[in-house]
Image 1 (cartoon, one colour):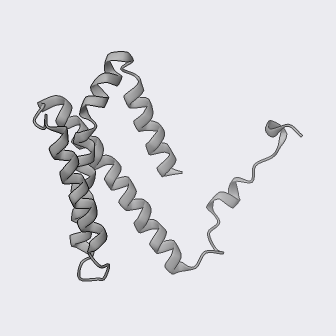
Image 2 (cartoon, rainbow, N blue to C red):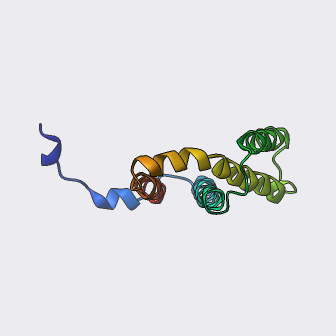
Amino acid sequence: MNVFDRSINFDALFKFSHISASTQEHLKRVYGSFALCMFVAAAGAYVNMVTHLFQFGFLTGLGALGLMVWLTATPHNRETEQKRLGMLVAFAFLTGTNLGPLLQMCISINPSIIPTAFLGTATIFAC
C-alpha cells in the first residue's frame, strides 16, 4: 500500500472528546509554555546577535544551568507557579543568548537556515 493513497480523516485531528477536560487544560498549559519559551529564546538569540551584549557564553551557560537547577529544586504548587514560569522564561532567554555564536556561524554558511528552523519549529508546536 502506498502511503500517498490513503485517505486522511481530518475530523479526527480535532476530536478531543476521549481526553478528559483536566488533561486537555494541562496540555494547553504545557504547550503554551513551550511556545512562550521558543519565542523568548528567539528573542534572546536576536538580542545577542544584534547587540553583542552577552559575549561571554560561559557565563550565560552557567546562568542557564543555575536556573535549570533552581527550577527543578523548586516544588510545584499554586504559590510557586508564577515564580517557576519566570525561571523557565529566564532560562529560555539565556539559552537563546547562548546560541548567538552558533547562529552567527549558521548565517555565514547559509542565511536561510535560521528562518527555516524557526518556522519549522513553530509549525510543529502549532500542530
